[in-house]
Length: 234
Ligand SMILES: C[S@@+](CC[C@H](N)C(=O)[O-])C[C@H]1O[C@@H](n2cnc3c(N)ncnc32)[C@H](O)[C@@H]1O
Image (cartoon, rainbow, N blue to C red; front, side, top):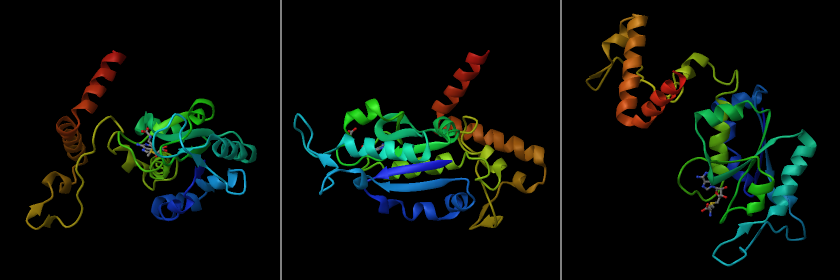
């Protein structure tokens, strides 16, 4: 998968993409990420990228021209890509949306700043607006990184052990069961006996029950969604 990121602050991206699984995915050619400075697509000696909002109100709004020019230049060079505007008003990013996006060959992520981006970008350029949650961040760079990370986990070959992720939280509409590793006893707290039993069927049963119980207590909304979906299939 190819991901192009348009931002006014390219420096934010150096670091998070250069470690661990994302770095390996990039080195292995499974994921290509290129960060572009939106100012390079701005016209004029001062390369202005933002202006005060029409109609008044505080702050600045990102101008449409550099964003359109940036997305169009990337499409001219690398072919059609799905343009995603990071926005608190977009579709909330969850596992289902991440899986869907992982099936795209090319994503172009547009990071907003200040009071946001001129509405014409959402209306006439972006294919999709994506939010990472019901709160407002200072910019779209952290949401873009979250999106790249979660989407990369769904790309074939990115995770060392695909079995491990099939039990991850949200995979079957449930939270994952608790995990333990060495030592068997830590400060008087022991690992559940069943995990040391070597009985794989018993371990699977325990994990399923823990997963259900955890989801019931912490995220009853997920269980309700699962039940509703199951009823819809009947
Ligand atoms: C300060 S926010 C603008 C918020 C806007 N005034 C509003 O109330 O909807 C600046 C930029 O940060 C990004 N952003 C902030 N919160 C976000 C969220 N929850 N999910 C995705 N992007 C977000 C968007 O790119 C947005 O254009």
